[in-house]
Image (cartoon, rainbow, N blue to C red; front, side, top):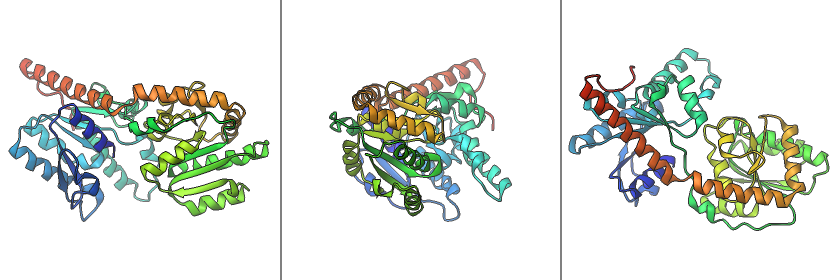
Length: 371
């Protein structure tokens, strides 16, 4: 969905583009997209080989058109660098992960994992003419973890769907309605949140309700909430569509998203766009999105006692929490837009193209990182 949002923003700027979707057919969400869309069939062997179909689609497009640049995303772009370099077409990559988590993935086949990470994740980033990072934190990871040439890294914040800015907001007498939304995993902090809310209840903050929207192992989370004695105050909603999520965010007074790792934190930015104060963690790019003490509260990752204290602080001062939420909305509306993302990407591609032209005139050759 990030790629589609970026493509739409580029289109609004007058860019002529073709979007390649890894699929046997064009998906419903792209059937009536205001741009050319090509389907690249996924690999029947393994998803990491999806880039073979993408390469063939790009080759087909390049045969009939003069292409100014190609921008890729994740492993789908793994087979593009060599072809684009030979064709003299600038190649950009969009940073897609918290790359510090790559080494944390457990597997019995460590040698195979290391080879796959190098070929399908590190190599395309290192060989790209320009790599777009969604945050300063992600920029540092690209350089320090993935080995990308610092001169090839450009920051391009992700944007927020402007419909979140339209969600009505009104001050209530109590800040007691909490929301968590996103993937229901350990790294996103959902279990930390349940532990913290049990502690909030122990400390006398009993009048609250949490709505959880997302996908994951819901049954184990229900069991955890039951063991903690808070199941009657927690409602699991499952995966929501955009309209359903808007309704939940309008209902809520506070978004609690205590993720332990974020390369950007789009859910956090969306919650702020909805006018909600946010409680999250001092990790990854989160401090770039949440202004601690101004648009929300930040605690150390995994510190459930501090998380509980932040929740109690929000509950005790509903007017302050409301003001933080509105300040966060203003900040997101000016800083995190897809229009700005598209502008930053176009500027990065144009600057790199100009640099390569200058190198060519001086006889230095293209500025593409070695394999």
